[in-house]
Length: 438
Ligand SMILES: Cc1ncc(COP(=O)(O)O)c(C=O)c1O
Image (cartoon, rainbow, N blue to C red; front, side, top):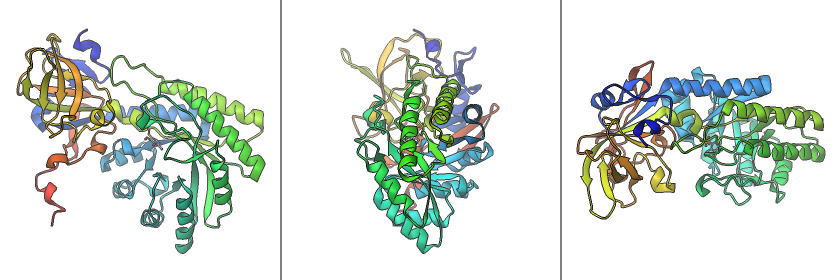
């Protein structure tokens, strides 16, 4: 195998100098100009993915299709500006995300507020800031939302998060549609029906419909049809039981992306059209008006629009054992391997034509043995201090999960648009780290 076979996204290439290019730009030039570690994001790719979703949803459901970006994947002001320009809706899970979106000029009416534990303060903040939709995750929250809406003389628009009981067989940590989940109300146990009844009885709640999210990194093309079927059967049951016709059905996010060249390809556009055919025929066969259908992708919008560059600090060769290549980032900027052994493709940015003759764990600089970016990576034997290493597909759940562990400043996010670069989030300074200290 060669590094060329590991160019897993179409924005990756190798130039005549043997350098990795990203979004058409030499990654060594990027590292030189912005330093490392730095997150780079391909804005054109982000917009392309928004358009794939928007056109798929329009072609599948007409005016009733809605694309919502799950902003937990990558949340910062410029991302909400892009989403606003692309006329996307956004899913937010905290008042931090709500505030960031609003400060970026994103219309709050187009926000869906998730989270399995919204405090009274969160609910009040969201209501006062005119957040469009509340995704109800538990009974206590619904009762609080009704009460606080009443106190503020508002009526909250709500959809109920339902767990359809699907086990998607992805990592345990990203599988959320099973009955045994901290999220939402199970259909199977009757909890989803009970909460619907309660919501319909409330003065200050305007129940619009239902939501589900069965998991992440899904490639199985029929998962969404299976969950749509369960959700539509539930909607039908609720109509027969309470006379309530749901006008919204949110099928969640979860479409997979390629982290390794062994990951399958998935045609999201085609897949959504298939879901559309199923939903339309189910609704007409069962005499229900088709609800508005939304998808709520995060990872597949931004993941392969991202790439992180690091500089190698040392190469530790241990005869008879695995080698270690340490770089100037790690679990503080990409916690995903440490958290759930997430796979990544790691490339020698300046040595893409050399042999793959060194097997090494690419590790970070945090004081944890588990601070591994990726184990058993193939790199050139010549790898040495000062070399640039690229980790691909880091656009989702990297910057947004970054921490200051070991008091390491978070890296900048640099956007690439039409071959030109600009800073979307500046890198933290040592002084930034002291901002909240008394
Ligand atoms: C409720 C909900 N919606 C959407 C998403 C986005 O999923 P993905 O990034 O896999 O598309 C998540 C991810 O955790 C989620 O919990």
